[in-house]
Every structure is written in C-alpha cells, then in structure tokens.
Image (cartoon, rainbow, N blue to C red; front, side, top):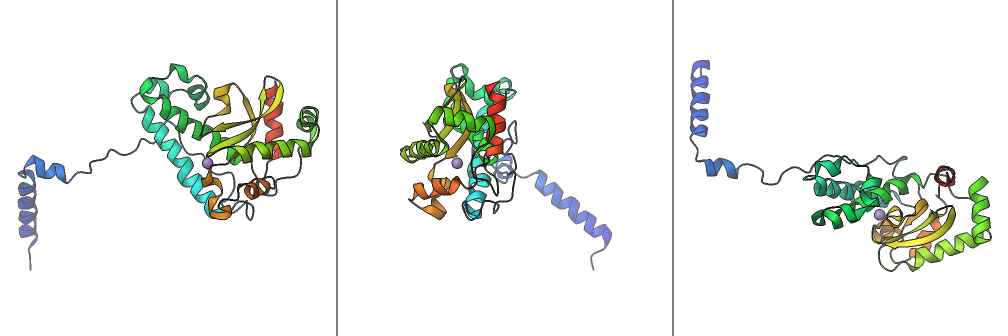
Length: 241
Ligand code: MN
C-alpha cells in the first residue's frame, strides 16, 4: 500500500528530477514544427455532401479534391502570409488581382495558392446536384448572341477545356461586358487577367483521375450534368453591372 503522504512525496520528487533535466533533453521532447496558421483564410464548406454529384463526379474525388487539395491551397496561402500581417487583412480578390505589389518572397506562393483558393471557392458553387441543362434569361441571351447558340458555346468551351495542356482551368468570363471563353494554366485566376469569371471548369487531373483516368473529355461531358446555371446567371447579372 502506498499512503497518500508517500504518493505526494513521490510526485514531488519526480517533478524535482524533471526540473533539473538538461535543457537540451527537454527541448528534444518538444514538437519541432510550428502548427500551421489557422487564418486569415479558411476552407469554405462544400455546399452539398461529397456524394451529391454522383455519378458524374464521384464522392471520393470530391472528398480529396475539397478536403485535401483545396485545403492545401488555403493552408499554404496562410503560411505565405504569416509574416505579412498587412497583406493578411486583404480579401482574396485583392490579393491576387494586383500581384505586382506583392513582396517577391511570396508572390509565386500567393499566385498559386491564392489562385487555387479563389478558383476552387467558386468551383464548388458552380455545380449542384440535379444541375445541368441550359442557362435561362439574360445569360442565355448573351451566350446565344456571343457564340451563336448554346450547343455552339458548349462545343467551344469543351474544346478549350480539352486543349488545356497539363493542369489548368477553362472559364466562361466577362471581359468588360463581353462574354468570352478563356483557359489559364495552373491556378492562374481569371481576375488576375482582368476577367470576371461566370463559370469555370477545373481540368487538373486531381479533379477527375480516380473515376476517368486519362479520359478528360468524358469528365468534361459529365461535368455539364452538374453545372449550376442559376449561380452562373446570378454572377452574370451582378458582374455585368
Ligand atoms: Mn482542383
């Protein structure tokens, strides 16, 4: 039996030993990596469950794409901004719109990870379960006026997305008040090129490889079944001003 008095004595003795441990030893017991900053940017939640876009976009891809890839862009953007509190106060749009003013040390990190955060934050909203079909209203009229017809637009957008070499995005965007289809490499965001994005498609392999492997055209065709045209139409109305 250990009495309470003996137990207290033992605890006190152990604490005394710990206090006299060489500093180097106790340092070695500490974790060496600083925890990743939790802000200023955060991963927005998916607006629907990961399996909501099945069978067109599979749940596992959505889970990794949002929970790992997009999360990594957010974490790396926060890390890049950790030593720049004034920049950390800016919105994501402000940060990536005028990259010439960014410090050399973090310009590329902000371009890639800030662009990744901007693009993906829009991408999740540009899709919805039970989406697809065709745009209506003013956006439909503008698409007809610019591209001739919805099928002609779809063909042109599909071609742009198919032809992105390596990793990148295809966008339907406003240049001033004019609709255009444009693709960008990597995570370069349309707003960094002065375009206002209406609808975008991620054609990085991480967006489709688990289900479609090398068959990007199949992924593009399937994606049209989940396009959120209501969201695109709202953006068109707002951005056209
Ligand atoms: Mn992606």
